[in-house]
Length: 370
Image (cartoon, rainbow, N blue to C red; front, side):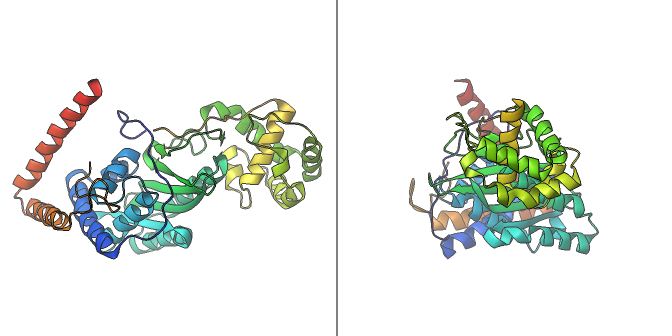
């Protein structure tokens, strides 16, 4: 995953409510300067790499003064970044699309508009957006329903995804990170990182161990007629399945899957990714095919949970202390001036920030060794 020296699990309980206006406005201003500084120093592709690192993302949330262990870390920070660069997209060569709830469904249209405005080929980016969401909602069935999808991309076609699902049973959120340049295969270990508090048994068809299961699932969808498929499922519903297995026959309603099975049978997808991309193929379809794959052919998919895995201005909820507004505003001014001077060729402030980073990096590595 991005930032390979750092691994762990983030704590993301679901928190209701909205960001206070006074804080969100400051988050936007500070995000604006941070993004400009990173893109100016290292390029837009580096910004994507950092966003795809779940730990860097969590640190950014803390620097921006957001609550350190809230589900809002994802939605509010992504929203602040999107708002902060909307007027300088073309200058930076960096764009943001999507967001929370209904806004997430506008992602393809937003990406396409950038393509129309700039001449960028939007089609592969739209596909990346749709497939990353389809994988985390359908091929990885961990009990978390996606409700937030942010898609970041450059004018060179590079991309990253930060998306989040919620689980209303355990009241936790799970954040998924993708980095386009590291995705060799959308359906085999594609994630840059997954942050969650809770790990458990998961239908994980994008695990390396699920390679055989993906092949069997694809063949089942193409070779067995819809009528035979439904007959097999109804027969299996009378079986007692192992308690360890998250896929249970009683959760599947065969008759509701008939139209989808007709589509998969007629289209005959050549591989699992193509099967996943078929409209209408959702979690229940994949669950049913996985069940048949294991119980008819003994090809079990992986059930391993893929999740792995500094307060500069205080925190929204007062932990470890309330947001220090004067210090926050001073940070924005200092960084803004450093970026402005760097553009003019006066780089003392930026060099000082770089030296500070090296000191922190050295000390951080020392704590790891200890």
